[in-house]
Length: 445
Image (tube, rainbow, N blue to C red; front, side, top):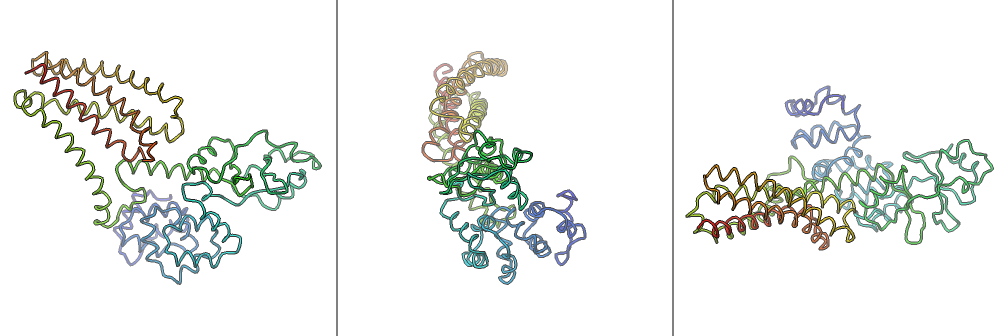
C-alpha cells in the first residue's frame, strides 16, 4: 500500500463526502484489490460508500471478493442493478462462488446468465458441495494430457498456456481417471519422443472432493507442490486445489476460530449497526452470565466461612485466576492440535498424562510461592497452606479440563474454540472456589 492505512483512513474520514482526495484516488488506481478492500472495511459506512463509488469498475468485483461478508453486503446493496450487468462481464465460476452467499438470488441468476456454458457447469457442480467441502473450491485451470502423451505433447501444451501456480501436468486415462503427475521442470530438456510416464513423480497426494476443506488445504500446504489434483470417488480428475486457495481457506478458518472464541462472527463489520452488533454479542454475554451465577452459587455455600475469615475473600481471585490461565494454555494447545489433526485416539492418553505432569509441576511451584506470600501478608501460616493446596488442586483440574473438554466437544460436533473457554473458566472457577473455601472451612474455623 503506497500510503499507510491509518493515514488513508484519516484522510478519507476528514475529507468531504462529496469528493475524495488525490492520494486515495491514486491508491485505488495503483493498489491491489485487497488493499482497497482493507481500506473500505476500515471506514464508517458513509465514507465507505463514497469511496466505493470512486473504485474503478474493473476492480470492483475483485475488491468485493477480498472483503469480509458483512461490509461487502453494504456495498452490494448500494450498487445499482444496471452496474451489475457490467460487473458480471467475464466473471468466472470461482469468483461467483466467493460472492454467492452475499448476493441476492436475482443477482446470482444474472451472473449465471452471462456466463458461458462451461463456467455455468463449474458453478453448478461446485454448488453440490457445502462450503466446508473442498469440492466447493476447486480450480479448473489444469494442464491435462492423456497417459500416452510424450514430452513433445507437453511442450506444445506449455507453449499455449500455463495457469498461475502450476508446476505439474496431470495425466489421465481414457476414462478421465487421474493416474500420474509430471513436473514441468522434468519436461524441459527431456527427449521429445520420451513418454511422460517415464519422468512422472513417484508419488503425489490426491485430494478427494468430498474431503473437509481445511484438512485438504493443509494437505496441499504440506505437499511440496503448487497444487494437488482433486478427484471424485471414481478417481475422475475434476480440477485442482492450489496453494493460494489452500492458504486462504486455512487463514479464514484461523480467523473464524479467533472470533468464535469471543462468541463473534469473523464476517462482522467494524461499523455494523449498533443494534445488530449488540444482538450478535448478547447471546454470548447471557451464556457467560449463567456460568457466573453458577460460580457465585458455589461461593454462597460458604457464606459463613467468608464472614468469619475475610482473608479468604481477598485471596479468592488469585485461586481462580491461576486456574483459568493454566487451563487456557492447555486448551489452546489442544484446540490447535485438533485443528491440525495431531490429537487422535492413539495419543490423547499420553497427552493427558503429560499435561497433568506439567500442571502438577507448575502447581507445586506456584503453590509454594503463593502460600509463602499469603502467610506473610496475613501473618497466618495455616492460611498459606490452605491457598497452596487450593492452587495445586485447581491447576491440576485445569490441565485435566483443558485436555478433555475440547476432545469431548469435538466428538459432539461443537466447535471447541467457540465454547471451550467459557466451560473451562466455569470449571476452574468452581473447582478453585470449592477447594479454597472448603479447605478454609476445614482448617481455619
